[in-house]
Image: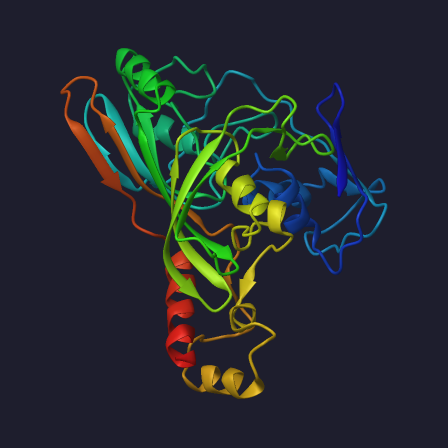
Length: 346
C-alpha cells in the first residue's frame, strides 16, 4: 500500500508501504494514479518529472519498500482544452449527441497536470460544438468510464439535451450493461448487490464499502458462462458510483481479472488461466493445441471490464435508443482462450 499526498505546488508524493516483487515503476504508477494514462505516466518519467528518493529513474526501475516517489506535475491552464487528432470509434452520431466506443487506457477528461491525450481532447478536435454544462474541462461529458474500462460512453453536444439526459441518469432511466470476466466460479446464477460505496479511509485514490457514510450503490449480475476458475458475467448498474462494479465484485470474492487496484494482479497470462491445479499433461496439451501463440505475453493488461450496451430516450426525437459497443481485442482473446481451455478439459 502507498500513502498518497499532493502539496500546493501540485507535486504528488507516494511512499511505498508494501513490498512488491519486481514491479516496474511505470506499471505501479498506472495502478496508483487512475486519472493518468499509461502513455502520460511514461512520458512524465522520460521527462524526469518522476523521482525516487530524489533521483530520476527510468520506466523499468523496480520499486522497493519505503521508496519515496515524487511526481512534478506541469503547470498548465486550468480551463483550456487543446484539440488533438486522436481517432474516435463512433457508434452513433446526430446533431445533438454521440455514442462512442472508448478504448482501454483512455482517460475521459483532463485533470490536474494531465491536459492531453484524453477523450475530451479528441472530442475538441472532431466536434464543432459540445455542451459546456459539466464545466470547461469536461465539455460534452454527461457520465464517465474508468481509464481502463472500455466501451459505450455517451457524449452530448446540445445543452438542453444534456440537461434531459442528466435527469435520465439521475432517475436511473439510462440502461447500462457491462461484461466482466471474474476470478473464481460463481455459485449463484444471478444476484443483486446492495452495498454502500465511499472513499477508502487508507487510500484516497481508491473506493471501498463504507457502511458509515458511503453512498447507496446497487449492482445486478447474471452469469453468462463458467470456466475453470473464472466466470463471465453480465452486469447491470442501478446506480453509478466510482469503481462500483470493481468494488462490489471484489467484496463478494470475485474480483475482475487484471484489476490491479482491487485484485493485486496487473495482467492475466495463459498459465493463469490453466491454473496451478491442472496437471502438467493439460499444460502440454494446451500448448500443442496452440491456445496461445506466446505463453509469456499477457492476454490482457487491464481490468476485464467492458461497457457493452447503453440505452436511453433521445430527448429531442423521444425515441428509445440502444447501442452496443464491440468488445475489444484483449477481452475477446481472453474469453476465447477460456472457452478453448474449457473444451480441452471436457
